[in-house]
Length: 378
Image (tube, rainbow, N blue to C red; front, top):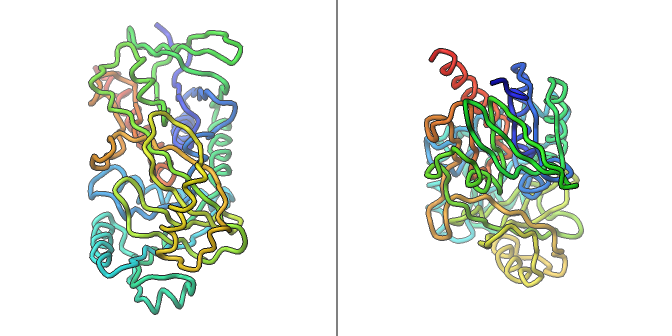
């Protein structure tokens, strides 16, 4: 049987676009399917837009490896393509003496991951840099930065299309099946028109929806589909001039990196995200969260005027672990995990997914190419 198209990528967030761009550059015929009316409207558009250094993740994990590799790829890609970005650096701050040991552990973990440029700052050195800061000590990460995520995604799509890829928006995938060596992807558009296409290679980069797609995938071993959980993170913006020139992060929390301060490309300060486990994705920013934000922020920014905090936006993290469980790694499932040739399923691609996106795209292309070579040799 002959496929309608060689390769389909489901999901046009930053990771799906990076995969499509990488695959199209090999000469593949690629179709990107996106259920919304624009690219990157969910997790990719609702985050801190931080280029992470690769500090926090366990040694040998995909998050550690792909973040460190992806960081350098992303900086280079931004420079080569004129994408707005800035190496702001960041300070990870201890606001109490008992947090200094945690910062020392972070420095050790970072070193194991190949992040060797962290610098200890005393209280006096940190305050000389950032007079509005309260801390007893800090770690400086000079390779952390920020990026215009929308500009990045537009550039990735443009390069994919220049290499022959096609984007289909307003197209929801309703079911997938595998039979006789081909994948059938069933879709419906906003008018209710149904369609099905076959492909030889399939990448599911569905973000919040990857597990749902996996559960509606005939022929995919269901044991290979991980659990699905959602953690909402709210952001508040700060009116007026930003009080800091670099990113400020408190000591990390179990499910996230704490309510940190980041800057957008225009220099506006924003605080977040917090962590609220939700049953389904929703993007509400409850006004009553303001007081909790103010309390957390004042630990490192004691002069905060709470009235300057304005409700911003929310994002939802696609989690594999349940509340209270240890953090889980990215899951990039190929034939070794599910037994189907030509298929890569991406699960749990939360932070640092934006930073790692180009590296994930390269990894997926390598896996798909290796599977194709194995199939041809068999």
